[in-house]
Length: 105
Image 1 (cartoon, helix red, strand yellow):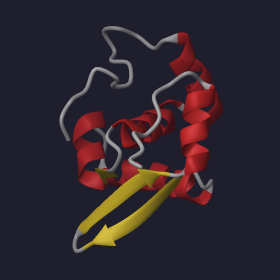
Image 2 (image 1 turned 180 degrees about the vertical axis):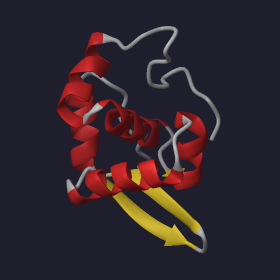
Image 3 (image 1 turned 90 degrees about the horizontal axis):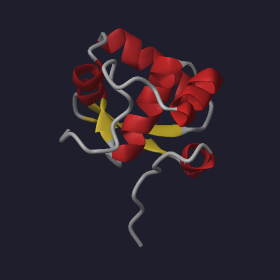
C-alpha cells in the first residue's frame, strides 16, 4: 500500500478536529482502519497491520466490527483478506469531511 497525502494523523502531527470527531464515534483505531481502507480504495489485513503497526488480531477485530456495522465489505482471495468501504462507510467519512473511497464509473 503506497503512502498518500491523506493518511490518518500521525503522532507527530496529531489528529485534526475531523479525525477526532470520527474517532469519538468509532474509536481511534477503528476510525484509522476505515479511513485507510477508503483512502486506498481496498486494503488487505496485512496492509493495515503494516500501516498501523498493530497486530493482525487487532486489525481483524476492528474490521469485523466495521463489517458488522455495514461500513466495509470483506472478501478472501487465497490467503489474503481484502477490505473495501461500503457506500454507508463512504458517506460517514464524507459527512465528517474526510476523504472517501475513490469511485470509478
